[in-house]
Length: 92
Image 1 (cartoon, rainbow, N blue to C red):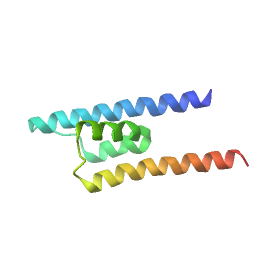
Image 2: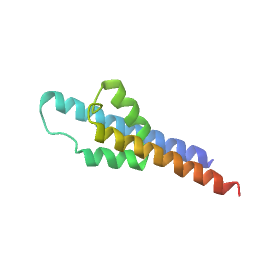
Image 3: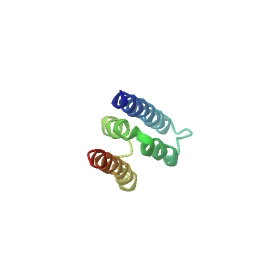
């Protein structure tokens, strides 16, 4: 049961994060107001990193910004480390 909650949590935040990246790309192409990188990173850190990684590669958005991509992948690694640590402590 608990895994369903986490699945839908990550899935929902991933969809939201992907939508925000698409909106940012849409606005960038038109030269309009953009979503702040801090906002994008906040949603990635909360759990939307899978959607962010998928969509940045799919629409080729922000991939030329190494600092942005390193931060995104760092959040993914952090989540992986936390899940490994939680599973390790849960089996002890």
